[in-house]
Image (cartoon, each protein chain N blue to C red):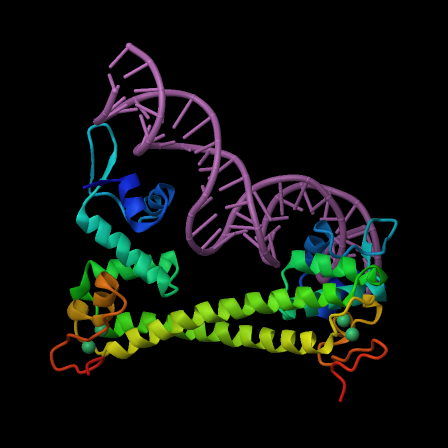
Amino acid sequence: MYRIGELAGMCEVKADTLRFYEKHGLLAPSMRTDSGYRMYTEQDANRLRFILRAKEVGFTLSEITELLSIELNKSEWACADVKGMVDDKLAQVEERIAQLNVFKTTLQALSRACCGGPESAEHCSILEALESSLTEVRCEEPGCEHGKQ
Amino acid sequence: MYRIGELAGMCEVKADTLRFYEKHGLLAPSMRTDSGYRMYTEQDANRLRFILRAKEVGFTLSEITELLSIELNKSEWACADVKGMVDDKLAQVEERIAQLNVFKTTLQALSRACCGGPESAEHCSILEALESSLTEVRCEEPGCEHGKQ
DNA sequence: ATAAACCTTGGAGTTTAATCCAAGGTCAAG
DNA sequence: CTTGACCTTGGATTAAACTCCAAGGTTTAT
Ligand SMILES: [Zn+2]
Ligand SMILES: [Zn+2]
Ligand SMILES: [Zn+2]
Ligand SMILES: [Zn+2]
């Protein structure tokens, strides 16, 4: 049996986080002492580890709530349900990666187009691209060939 | 000159968003009518387009505020300053992509390990992995070979 | 002259995942 | 029997970027 601070220390979260999880229905201690202290069992600790592992994979707390409700009633759910959640999350992650790759490509083009020198940004091709269009990225600084064919 | 709704429609944002940008110092209309209506000039519209392009690249509004302050005082800044911001953002984006790739890899392993069939999730390898460790991903369903060497 | 479509303001709500605070109660050591 | 470390509660705050609302004023067209 662990007090809140012990369990928190063990799992490298803050006690506040455990209270937060309790308030949001993810993890309640199995007991309280007579004086009201939360006492977590080993089973509670395992539940917390489940939560933290699911977070590592990118599930939100509300998705984890769903996962937990499956987990403690496994026989009423099919593999398909569980795998569906994983695949949905995978699709979300992939979509976000794709969007970030668009950002990345544009940022790389902007970076390449600017000489990054100490001269005035008056003709900085990054600013000019943002002013007019992200598709035209060329450095106009005299003597600077960045971004030019 | 555009009324707020016109400019919003033109740039495919909501009028509320323009009021929000004004409250946060990103974009104020150059004039008001006698009755208090916001009137945006073509220059204001260009500033909005600048903001929206910067958002497309993944800058936050507070970064865009900084970018705008450079943009309207270009001569006091160097190319290095501007490129520095782009490169910082690029590094952030790359870091986030790397984290998401970790999620993705683990999710793929989880997905591969589960048969996704209609049978009970009692022995679902996804749940088991979350219960014990993300590194052990194997399907224990009788007859199911997913995730097994 | 009246209805529809637009605009104004201030303020509250949304989402996510905590984090922090104040005022007070509990427990073990010395 | 008093410190100090720990615990309790409820409620406020954070960041980000909107989004919505109510109550009322303005414009424009019919
Ligand atoms: Zn240059
Ligand atoms: Zn430059
Ligand atoms: Zn299976
Ligand atoms: Zn399964």
